[in-house]
Image (tube, rainbow, N blue to C red):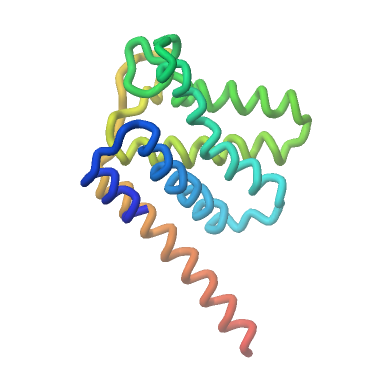
Length: 164
């Protein structure tokens, strides 16, 4: 993720190229969360990974010239807690599987976490406010680092128990 963010910062690529770099970083963020939470259900894990990148389809109307979802915001209003709830509810209604809905919620939450830390702001509290929230990049990276260390520690503990 650091490499992707460095490339994005240094090159400031056009939007289509940005997606080719940023979407794998969203996927990696969600994968780290899935690993740290030790998600065993493959359906839940797959739904989380798919949702972590599929949420960015909400940028298409803006790219096609319609500000339907971005009239007063940088990112679409579906990049909010309300969007997370509505999209999760739709996933639950369509799939009727709790694992799918839980995975969608987890994937979108991981996506929003990355967006909060990588600039531009997120209309997290929409429709209550159009104000865009963000966290310092260093906080985002520190939290990711902590998750990675937690996962590494859990793996090393598992290996040491297996060798006894």
